Image (cartoon, rainbow, N blue to C red; front, side):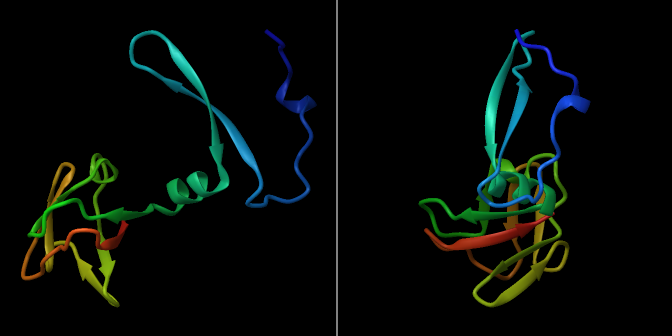
Length: 112
């Protein structure tokens, strides 16, 4: 394995959407996997926002892994923003609507 000091790596002149980032993810079993992350993935992580597509069932519940371990503060869709506690509740990775309905294929911007 090539070992290089961080101080030997040049600083990029500008960060663009063409940039890639290399990261190592712990697999939880004593091993790890190296991944190449895109600019968009880094921006999504840093912004605390994710576009969620409602699954195959209309209703008042949506479940997505993005919700897990995060407090979702708002959902935006159809030109409206909906607030946690007023318009929906959250339990783990599931959002339950209060007075609103989610529709199959609907795109929702979730903000944590």
